[in-house]
Structure formats: C-alpha cells, structure tokens
Amino acid sequence: MSNIRTIPGKGFCFTLIELLLVIAIIAILASILLPTIQQARKKSREIKCVANLKSIGQGLMLYCADHNDILPFHGEWEACEWDVDIIPYLGNAKDCSHCAVYLCPEYRETAVAQGWNPDSAGNAWRIHALYANNAQLALYKITKVKKTSQVGMIFDASFLGGNHAATRPTYTQVGWRHSQRAANFLFVDGHTVTYPDRRTSDPIITIFNL
Image (cartoon, rainbow, N blue to C red):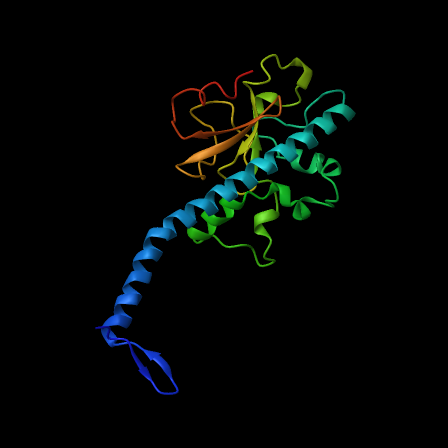
C-alpha cells in the first residue's frame, strides 16, 4: 500500500523517506546530465570561435583587395596591428573595443576560471584580438602563397592581446583552450580546422611554413 496520503484541503503529502528519495534521484540525474550540458556549451563556444575566424578571414581578404594583395601582418616581434588595420572591413565596428569578432568565448571562460580579471574599465577581454597571425606571412602577398589549404593564417592565441610570434613549431603561441585541448586554425584558402594539441606531430609542425 502506498505511503502517499491525502490531507483534507491540502492534497497529497509525502513521508520524509520519499522526499529524500526524490532529492537523491534529482541529484543523480543532475550529475549525469551536467557534464553533457557543459560539453555542449564548450562546443557552442568552439563553433562561435570558428565563426570569428571566418569573419576575420573575410576582412583580411577585403583588406588585401585594397592593398595590392599584401597581408597586414608585421614581423615576428613587431606590434600586433593587423586587428586594427582590418577594422574598416568588419562591418560597423569603430575600434578594437567594439569588435566582438576578436573575442574568443572559450578564452574568456578559461581566463575567468584561472582568476584573471578585466581591467578597471571592465573591457580587458576586447582590447586586442585574442587571435594571432602566422608571422611567416608578414607583409606577404597572399597571391604568392602556393599551398593555400596548408598554410595557417590566423589561429587561437595563448596570450590576451594575441601573439604573432608563431613561426616555429617549438615556439608557437597557440591557445589550446577548446574541448580536449584543441585550437582553431584559419587557413589562407578560408577553411578552418580544429586540431588537438599533439605538440610535435603533424600537422602542427608544418602549419606555419609557406
């Protein structure tokens, strides 16, 4: 016979054991579903990051069309200014602080988790691009790139503000921050790939070579 009882004017009531059992079941279901939900959120942020790279790539192509096919990248240790150079080609953005396309959502999640905070103005996440360029392409004509589907152009950066020193596989400032320590790369031909962090294995070794 069920332990659920009715009280006149108050409907059903449960015993303490039944209530605890319901709470335990909810807790178990939550523990099962939470990792799945978190993974789905990470995947959503990864997709947004890829969309950012594609938009940046379109801006770079438009810039090249107006500048004799020359990419706006600078030398390995020069100031990172390509993000500023292509602002006119990114729609309604007025300056870098208004360019949501430069904000990798997974970077912000990672930074918050590690206790990094925005500056006093609250805009540290958007001061510069959170993506970096292949320094091998500094002031390079895009029409001179032969293997456009194999040469990386823009990628997730490991530093806030980006880092363009990415010419050597032993010193690539790649931000391996997505699911299963992966990073997104935009190639010269416009396609994007998400690679896991394999350190010294292909294709990361050759991705920055012309």
